[in-house]
Structure formats: C-alpha cells, structure tokens
Image (cartoon, rainbow, N blue to C red; front, side, top):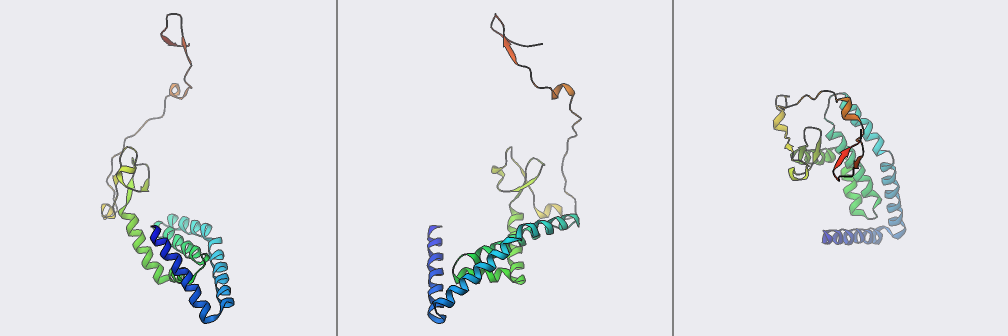
Length: 182
C-alpha cells in the first residue's frame, strides 16, 4: 500500500513537470487550480443530490445500490480533481464520463452484492459472516430470481407492562443475602 502511494505521488509530480515543460509553469498552475475548483464544485452538492436520487429510486421500487454507487463515483471523481496532479485529473475525467462510470458502477455493485450479509434478519451490511454479531445469512442475487426471498419469522407479542418497569434496587439485609425491595 505504501509503495502504491509513493508511485502515485511520483506520477503526479512527473505529470505536473511534463505539462509545465510543454505549456509553462503558469499554465500548469492555472490548470491545477481550475481542476481543484471543478472538483470542489462537484463535491459541494453531491451528498444531497445522491440522497434525493436514492430516495426517488426507493419510492419507485428501483434498486438503490446503483444510484448510491454512481453518486460515490462522481464524488470520487471530484476528490481526484482536488488532488494536485494530472494523472488523478485524467482518472477523474474518465469517471465523469457516463459510459466509463457505468462500467465501473456495474463492477462495484457486483462486488458489493457478493459481499452482502443479512444480520439476524434485521438489515443488510457489507462484510464477512464472521463480522456479523451472532452470525449472519449470506444473501445473493440468485436467492431472489423469482422475486421471493424464503425466510423464517417469529411473531412476538406486545411487551408486558411489568417488563417495562425500571428494576428496583436490591438491598442487603442483616443475614447477608440480597432481596428485592417491595
């Protein structure tokens, strides 16, 4: 991982030096500033826009994951534009192109789907079965081919009013054993 970061830093510095040698340092700095401003403007409204699109997808009965992943990819492109250097800018511009983003989105959604875990029937998260307290049940797209997920449920009645009372403090009487206060 450290080697990858070092290679990325060297590539970014080399890209700035190459552009500066061809277009001049002033033009290279102006391009870097422009890319940073573009990245900042992309990042500014990304969260609210993605949340609105995800909500609309959920209400329309469509899958939410592609919408959220698409928003995350555009935000990643904005972040890459903020990083000074032209290699990250090139990757960001590729992510901003809809066909390239669709290709990456499909791979990310497939990767997430393979790692989806249902924890105790109460919700879904990403991780390994060992990461889920009390174990979990893996969920795969193949499980829902016909639109039905087979599951088991247990109905639980309303709680008894006595169960909702705060526990009473215990007191030690003269003989030593603990007893509940009336």
